[in-house]
Amino acid sequence: MRVGITMRDVLVAVVAAGATLGIVASAQETPAPILKSTVFDWNSWPVRNTDVGQSRQVVRQPTLTLDELEMHVTTLKPGLASHPPHKHTNEELLILKEGTLEALVDGQWKKVGPGSIVFQASNSCHGVRNVGTTPATYHIVNWSSPGKLKTNGPAVSCTP
View 1 (cartoon, rainbow, N blue to C red):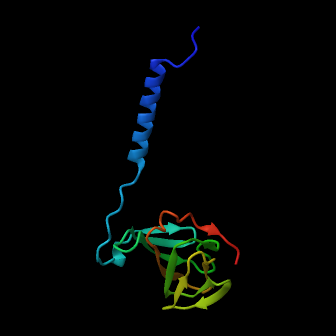
View 2: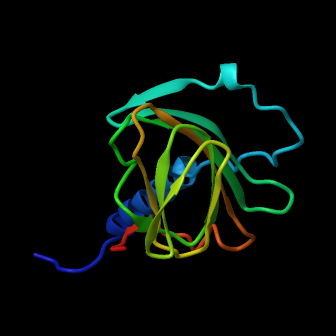
View 3: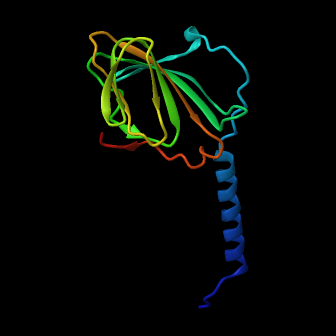
């Protein structure tokens, strides 16, 4: 019985490595095109029902100056939070269209009404909850500055 690496072993290893690299390369997403000036029509956004209300995804694309611009709209049922407080490296704006929210800002819950804007800085613990008696609808605009998208990890839970 001979022990060692044969030419057949080398050939099998090369074919397996090539197939693996091919699968990995094909699995990588094609980069989204640069977002140009556009109009986002409320009626064209598909509505996704969630446990806490509804969500509408508007856009998630790079722009000429950002690695990624992401916008969505959430309608939150009365008495509920969108998710537990969390933090992430990207900054975001919340623009309240209708309803009453409490927003976690710098460790304090602050009550906001229609037309209010909440800015959340990078790595700031934040969250929102609907403290009104009607659904609250708000727009989220968040962005990843150049180079940050590659270092953005997932949102991390935090304690206010």
